[in-house]
Length: 135
Image 1: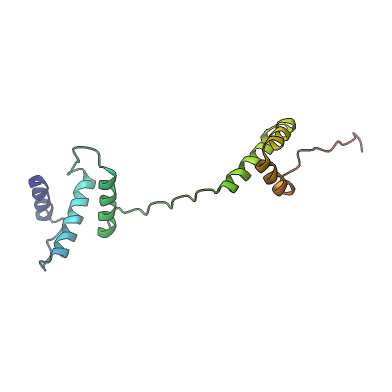
Image 2: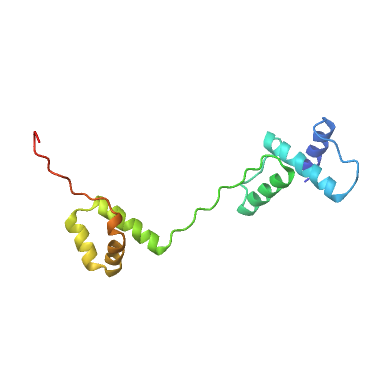
C-alpha cells in the first residue's frame, strides 16, 4: 500500500495531475482513481497475481466513473428458447440429412414432426428440375 501511495504522490509531483483544491472525500477519490488508472495502464503499477472476477468488475467500475479506458461490454446474447432451438435443428437437418434419415427422425420424434409440419412451407425445396437438352 505504501508503494501505491508513493506512486500517486510521484504521479502528482510530475505534473500528471493536480491534487484537488477542495479537500473532500469525493474529490480525493476521483483524483486517486484517475492517478491509479493512469499508472496501472502505463505499467507503473503491476498486479502481483491475476485479478479475480470481482477485481475485474471493480476495475471496470473505476474506469467508468473516472472516464478512463472504459469500454461498454457487449450485450449478453439472448438465449434461444426450446422452440427456437428445435426449429434450428429441423432446418439444419433438412439442409444436411438425406431424405430417409429425415423421415426416420420425423417418424420417431413427435415434437420434431410437429415442428417440421409447422415450418415445412418455409423450407427451400431440394428437388431440382430436369431440363431437356435443346428445349
